[in-house]
View (cartoon, rainbow over the protein chains, first blue to last red):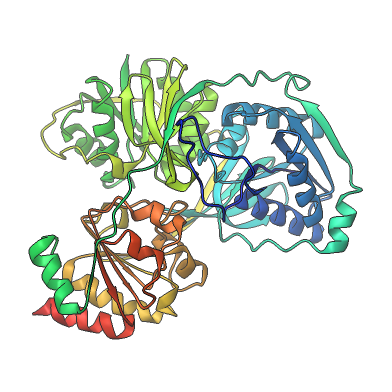
Length: 248
Length: 311
């Protein structure tokens, strides 16, 4: 079985995000970029399935600028077998899903594992959209994946607790935080990753129209919350909550 | 061309989150239909028909709709996209799973987690874990939206008298099966709709110590939450998590105990009306958003607080 894992290059999760003063977006100049953390979990899960002998090949794909090659190399260092870069900047989730559909069909994959959301646009859409376009089953927010014969059983983190669903293969899975803890790539594996195959195509090569549907009119900082006061004792706190804030 | 709101329910009761989406719908127009899809859920449809502002309820009942499996639910909603200009659901785990599937079936780019309606095609939404707010305009004819529940007050549960019309399911897609669920049982209010929330972080040290929070929660009728660190450490189950990747809450009172205040956590609670932080580290970032900060050892402070509240 072949697995496709899409990986997105995003602003590193440790970097403090700054909104540009002109309100056109977020400042990405000279900012550290990394693989979307949820995608790292997706790569790790796919590689573990391969190590367990349940999967023959793991393909990492990224849709983005030329620098997204680095993100693919990170996936290859974790253990993906080869990579595909689709050079297309600013693609929205629907366009990304269309590109991934083309790749999934071309490569004959049986399973696509994606991060549940990217930490830049926080859309939480691509996996579900891809499932719809392919007509496959989907399991979002996975915390446990059991690959069986022609099916996959997925435990999902839902609002009330946990839900377990069974999907017929081929299928789509999106990862939540507690599915696994991604490994650190070792130096030898990082060196090996440099020699792995990485092909480059364009959205047009795949016959996908990636024209955006949304227009960002402005981006602003959220309203700031001022720090309040420090209280010295529990008695003072309860008094303030009762008589000043009037919330208890 | 009206507005369709997807009801959130468990076949027995209508979840309050639905009423937040109805309020968002009232900002878009007055022709508001609620879709109740499930099995044996007439009572849910009756409740939806009473929500103030709702003009019609569509009720689809079939075994394959019982567990809101997106594979079976999305085609039904997508078909209704032919007669509705807006398709809305609250951004719960159900809404997040189903709506993008609907959007793709309609070739629409969904707008996720809207916080306000700025015009018929223009909305604000949080990006970068809430560190920036984007105003986006869509060019799609049908608008598929998920709604951030805390950004819209719940519509009154009573006051409406909508008609209920039965519609047919689109059948079982045969792609997925519901196997089971483990839902956290609690006598306390539900986290996302509670008016008071008390959350614990890594400083709680273990799950047993959450009893200290429970004692206070019992006194003020609060729900219990946690930071990602506390969930990752296994102190409490995943559905306690408050934060950008967990639940978004905006209660009247939020008490953060032993929580340092990572951006990820702040994104999930900073719209609370009053925030209290209790932490032994006076430099913890949580104090920068807290209305009332108490620097101290939570193991001393919490029992004192429970006692003070019983007075």
